[in-house]
Length: 279
Image (cartoon, rainbow, N blue to C red; front, side, top):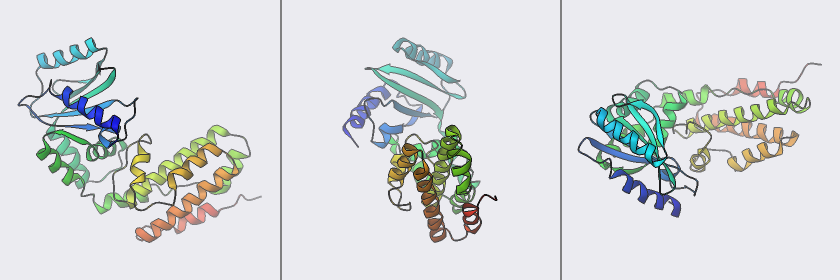
C-alpha cells in the first residue's frame, strides 16, 4: 500500500466514525485506495453495511451534511439503500449504504448461477480487493465465500469472449480505409475480450471496467508476456504494427486457453483469424 493510500485510509477511518452505530455491522474501502495504489486524484470509496434500513430522519441528515460539504445525493432511498458524496479535507469521499443481506445475496446468486453481468463482477471484485474498516468477522466470511469461484463461471468467461475478427478485416476495412474510429473501437473491444478470457483462466472476477484493470492483471499468473505493455503499444501505435501486435496477443491467449482450459476448443477461432479476403 502506497503513502497516499495509507493517508486516505486514515481519513476513511475518521469519516466512518460519524456513521458508526449498533445498526452498522461492517464497512470497507474499495477502489484504488482500498487496493493500495491511490494517487492525489483518487476518491475514497467507502461502503457501509447495515442491518436495518436508515430512518428518514437519519437519511435526511446524511444527505444534508453531504450537501453542506459541497457534495450531494447520488441515488437511492432509506429503504432501498443509497449513495452520497462529501468533500472532506479537499478530497471527494463517496459513501454507499446498503443492507448486508443484499451483499450476501449478490455473492450467493453468483455462486449458484454464474453470469457475466459486468456490474455484478465489479461489485464482487471490488469487494474482494477492499480494505476492511470495520466488522472484520463479517467481511472475511463474505470474502472467503466469494473467493470460491465456480468452474462454470471461469468457463463461460472464456467461452463467451473468444470472438475476434479475422486479421484482414482490421487491416483492410479499418486501417487501409483510414477508418480510425472503427479501428480503435475494435482495438478496445478485442482487449476487453482478452481481459475477460484472462480473468476466466486465472479464476477471478472481472474488474467490471478497464479503469483499474491494470492493477488486477499485474497479479495474474496466466497471461501473455508483457500483456499490459503490449496492449498500450497497440493503442499508442495505431498502425499495421499495432494490428500485428494485437493478433499476436490474441493467438498467444488462445495458446493459454489450450493449455489451461482444454475443454474449450480454439480451433474455430484460429481458423477465423487466418481467413483471407476473397479477391
